[in-house]
Every structure is written in C-alpha cells, then in structure tokens.
Image (cartoon, rainbow, N blue to C red; front, side, top):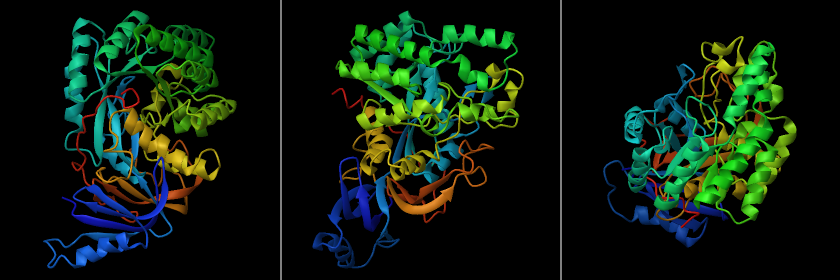
Length: 480
C-alpha cells in the first residue's frame, strides 16, 4: 500500500471546482480535502504526529505544491499500444507507452483489443490482456474492436459488457481489414442498445476513399500530402452523418472518434441539437497540426500520416468551438506511434503504404494546458475534456477523473509556469520523432501519483512496470 501522503498548498482543479486546498491520501485513495491553512488542513499533519510511533516505513510523505496546480491524473480514452498495422507494429509497448503516459500526467489509458476476422472477441481480448498484464506503469482498461459481426460476436458483446468491457469500436474505413458495412454496423448498434454498450465509430467512407487512393496513385501522386487530399473532409462528414442515423434507427448511443473536419463537427452539433445521445472526441494533432505538416518536403510529411487525416488550419476553429460548446466532449490522443526510420518509410513512393498513426500520449495534458494559456479553453474545461469526461464516458468515474474523497489517488502536481520545448530528444515515447518537434509550451508535469504511489517524483521516473492494474468499467455514465 502507498501509505499516507499530504499534498499541501496547491490549487486543486477539477472539472467543477477550483480550490486552494490540501489533499490527504491514504492507502491509494483520496481521504479528504481541506482548504489550505484551515484547522481541518492542519489536522492532517497534527493527526499524524499524535498517532504515536510511526508504522514501518513512516507516516508517508508531504508534497509541497505551493504555486502549483493539483489536478486529477489524465484519462486517455484512445490509445493503440503494440497495435499491428500495415505490416508492422506500433512502436510503443504497454511498458514504454504507459511510462510515457505517466511522464505526461496521464494515469489511465483505455486501449483497443482487436478481434481478427474469423476469430472471436474473446480471443482478441485475451491477446491484449497478455500484452498488457504485468507491463503497465499506470492503470489500464480495454475497448473492443469488432471486425467481424456475426451471431456469435453479438452474443459475446453481452458477455463483455457484463465483465467490464463496455465499448465497441467499428470502422467505416479500411476495407478488407477492419471495415464493417452498414448492415453489420446496424446489427452491432442494435445489440449495444440492448446491453448498454457504447459503439465507437471511425467515421470515414472507406469504400469511396479507396477509389480516390487508386486514382491518385495512377496519376503519380505518391507523396504523403496526398493522404490528406484523398481522405476528404466531406467523406468524414458523410460517414459521420450515416453513423448518426444508423444509431438513431437502432436506438443506440454513438461516440465518434478522432473528429478532424468542421463538416463532421456540424453533423455532431445537429444531432446533439436534436437531443440524440451522440458524442465526439478530437485529438491534439487536429487542434495543433495541419496539412502544412503533411506537405513537409523530403518525405517528412509521412510523420504526420494518420486517419482521419490532418486538415487545413481553418478547420481548427470549429474544433475549438466544439470543445467550448460541448459539441465535442473529449480530447484523446489516438496514440499509435510508428518510427520514421523503417516504419513510416514503408510508404516511400506510395502514400497508401505509410502506417497510419502519430505519437502523442505524453503530450496531451501539456498541449491542452497550452490551450488554456492561449485562451481557447478554461482551466476547468481542460480537466473536463482530459480527465473527468473520458472517465464518465467510459464508466470509470469517480474512481478516475477527479480529486474527491473515495477516488483513486491519481493526482498530478503541475507547474503552470515552467516552460519546455517538445522534442524527440527529451520525450519518453518509444519513437524516433516528435509530431511537435521544437514547439515551446508553458506548463509541465512535476509529480504524478498513481493510486497514491509516486510514479513521477520531481521530474524523475519512480514507477515500475506492473504497478498499473487492469480496471473493469461500468457502462457510459451519460446514459444512466
């Protein structure tokens, strides 16, 4: 057990409140909060000194957070550790990826187990448990990618919901790999309407995109920038609209992942205005990067190939507005890193062979704090979209996503004034480039507790593989 910790003098920020408070942690959970300097806060220390002889290992630690923020550990609801894709595998293992997440102030990830066509959901889930168990520095949970909808799969969905895997991802993209047609999507949505699960949708018209890919390659358009040009914003919007209407027919909720285009945001906004249980996430790459990056010369643009793709800069305003108006509710990373050397390079001469994905699990909390500094969002909205809402969306709240009595002591002491420059030379993700190389930002993680255990201590890694535990989830808490 982690014993007893007092975090003193910081500004505690949650999705709903800001309070100068001391936080008492006991046995891995938040035991109490008390306004700094009050008798209640002083009692945290006084009580400790009056307990007589300390137990083995002492009474624990006092962390001075004066001048710092004390925020909940981040919940990243969209990561792909060790994911096979395009003939290679994502560069971060569960060990390296969760260690990097901890460095960035994220204390829970929800990764994606993959069903292969012709195999069961259970086989896919067991394979991902085997990859993660004993290797994670922070706590983790799983979504399930459903690639093969059939009668057996639908029955398995019920069983997985009962045991805490309560969300299922489907793809309107990647024909021949993960793709589901409208009938398969409808059947899975109908099942989720019955069992309480949440369908997560990669909304792009993959059939039409494949035609545009082949036409572009036939014209000799092979550079990375054409990846963005063929995956058109209108085809993201069309698929988003179709997914929303299929969910409406099924009477099911819908969560659209990695929204990148202003036209897709408009579809979500319209559906939410109609009162439909439709939710959307975006990712830092769509908020901070653009097609300018995809067009970088000498194949450098390959570093920025992901799907949905980066969009022209003018789309960013709609994404920020969606986050402020709650038409977008979550910022996740879609962390799926492939090294430039030897992995991204598989697509030299054919952009369609570039593995899709960006590294980012370490950068999300910092980039969103920079959005606070830049005036895009408030401090509490930062915590809402990065911690509290993903925890509620995926059935982890209030165990995760907040600082309140009874919650897991997943806590970050954050220095809002420290300046840093993002770089592959200093990050901890197992990838040879940074998507944000050279970007100067304000704010930096100083200390991170995971269930009361310090995993980052004053900018030193003090965690270990195997500390993180699998965390079953309840159903989406916006639907109860």
